[in-house]
Length: 267
Image (cartoon, rainbow, N blue to C red; front, side, top):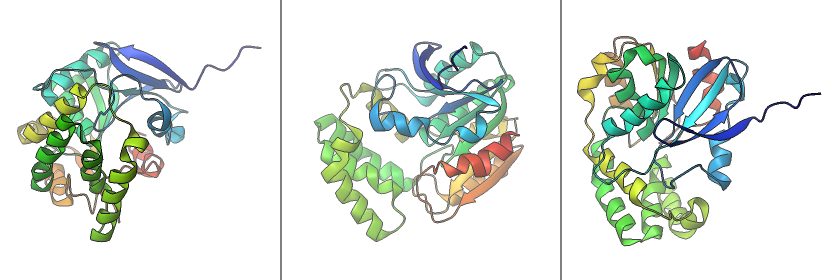
């Protein structure tokens, strides 16, 4: 009796993008995660998080969770999108494409540059530019990463998931005390710094009208990074956009949203 194929397999796509292939469904979903901390395939808790929540799609989809390769600081999201385009070209298009946070910015570039590659697009707690709130906080995060001050870096980053001032203080404390243990310390900061610098510079508003495929924007009502007002403006500018708002949520992608919103949208 033949064994069932493994649920998840590490592969490299395009220009050596570290990818997890999840499931064996007939359709293809490419998922671009948020901020990259560690080069290569995710391990430990990061891998468990990368694999969670996909079950509602696996009867129809093979999911490719496509990470970023190490690129020099100064590389923009447009160049990172070129890497993803090369990966999608190797999968056979069109695909469905989903991006979360900074991964959503990259997905927006892909869908605008090569509309024939993308059947449907999902942007989760993402947008065409970062808020003024986040831009003012990227400088101290970048400085902390460059200085190797990981407690401070994690304290600053963890706060974006907080829904209130009290939670913000608590998340800051958790980031300071446990951040290095929970998320690890990168062996090479180049990838993380390149993405943080790209995030600080990005302004992709001019691309939104070029996205032709049906697009679902999943926004969080308390997100300080990609605020709800920006998500509403994004949907208004998309030729074929729709909006779902996650209540009582900050900069977070609850796995339940895959079953509740992503799966019905993809059909």
